[in-house]
Image (tube, rainbow, N blue to C red; front, side, top):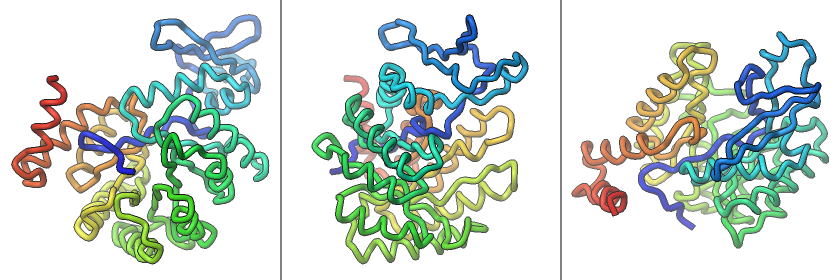
Length: 326
């Protein structure tokens, strides 16, 4: 099943228990010892998510406290909040919804139970494919076992060269999933662009052996924070360029918002880095499409493909504008 898209494939990153909102957000309301996050539904009504559990009593600590809102939504079984999170991403252009429950518990059996429950819940809200994301391959398998493929094909997020991750290759083949593949090595993260590319080539050779179609493969050369090393951006971009040249039919993406972590003006940096990534060869983005509207990136990708002779006779570009105008 091919993902239909205008120019870029968007992986919505925002249903992940690692996601937190700073306690100083204007969305937080507190009254009578209770705390909640407010949100606005598409119909204009205001909802609220109870975040009282674990929230500090000291007012100064409250402002700095990272609110694990996805964890609260799952533990509270707040279907309205979860529906709002999923549908706003889908309505903002996400083709996949990334789902990760790892931080909700340290216990593997509990984590698998949470993944099963979350898959069923999110599939009740959307027919968009879910990317099942976990550091534990068994948790991914647990989610796949309850996944309703009559609604969509799932994705596995993600394969790398670590020994415990390698069974994901056969799992993807047997369970007919998309496969996200990152540049992590057998014993650690890649040091530079060359190691990223070398790791990816090794993984692609392994995936070739089970004959997973190129259109089902999504390569992630790994984006690291630029604030930690000024060359991290170039390492990623150079690897994207090398992979695009070697594998013209594969999909390439990255967690592009990682680049700006710890720096001011993150949205400005994110927008610039996404543009550079598209020029380097990315045809997919893993972002929060609500905070980072996708239309401008899609049009940039379509336009650059015209101007660099990647869109023969501008056919995709013309089709997009005809569709938009109609």
